[in-house]
Image (cartoon, rainbow, N blue to C red):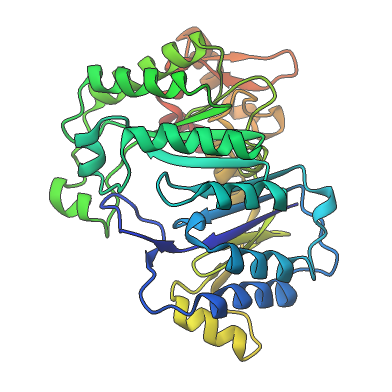
Length: 363
C-alpha cells in the first residue's frame, strides 16, 4: 500500500502543466495542512503503514518548515512512518534553502525530485520556470550536503523550438550532476493549458520525439542508468518504488485537493478546489468529487498501458490465448521479446509504440 499527498501551490503557473495547481494567493496554509491531516484521519485506517509516501504538486517545497511540521505531525496521528521504504518529495530549484533541505532529511524524506526541466536559459523562460541552470546545480549540492539519500532530476524534451543539440546539452549537464535518478518526459500539449492554446494539439513532431527519446536512452544508459520505464532511468538500486508501484497498478490512498486514490477496486477523486477542500474537512466530511468502481475489463485495460511501459514487461496472466498471433508478430518485428517467465517485454523500438501495442492487445 502507498500514500500520495498533493500540495497544489506554485510560485508561477507553468504553461504546459495540466495538474490541479494554483498560486498561493490568500490560501490559509495552516488551515490547508490541518485539512490534509484531517482527511488522513477520516480516510485512512488507524495505523496505516504505507510502503512508500510521495508528496507531489504543485510545489511541496513551498511549504514552510512550520507548515510541513504541522502536516507531518498530523499525518503521524494515523500513519505509521516506521515501515516506510521510500519517501519522495517534489521540489523546484530556487524554492528551498539549506535549512529546508536539512529539515527534509531530519523528517526522514529519502528522495527529492527536482523539477529542472532544462539546462537552457531560453527554454526555462519559455516553460515559465523561475530558476536558472546554475540554481539546478546549487540545489543538487544543497540536497547532497543536507544528507538527502537520493536525488532525481526531471527533464522535458520536444519543447517548442528545442534542437537536438540543446537536448544533448541538457542531458549531459544532468548527468554531470550525478543524480541517482533521471526522468525524461516527452512534452504533450494538454487541454486547459496555455501551451495547448498557443501551439495546438498537433504540435508534436514524431521524428523529433523519436530522436530525442533515443538520444536520452543512449546517453543515460551509457552513463550507467537503467532504463526501467519509458520515461525513467535509475542507477542500481535507485528506482522510484512509489512510481513503480503505480505502474504495477498497486493500490494507494491520495490526500489533498485534486488527489486520486484507488483502493480495493474503487477509485476516488477529491475536489479540485482548495477552498472547498478545506471547508469540507472543517465540517468533518470527505472532499470527494467522484468515486467509481473499476471493472475487471477496465482494470486489464489500465494494466496493459502501465505494465508495457516498464522493463518488467507485461505478465503472462494479462495475455489471452487470442493474443498469441499478435505476440508472435511483435517478436518477429523485433518490437518485443518473451522472458522465460512468459512476460512480454517491449524493446526500445517497441516502447516507442507502447500505446498503440496496448490498444492492439485490447482487441
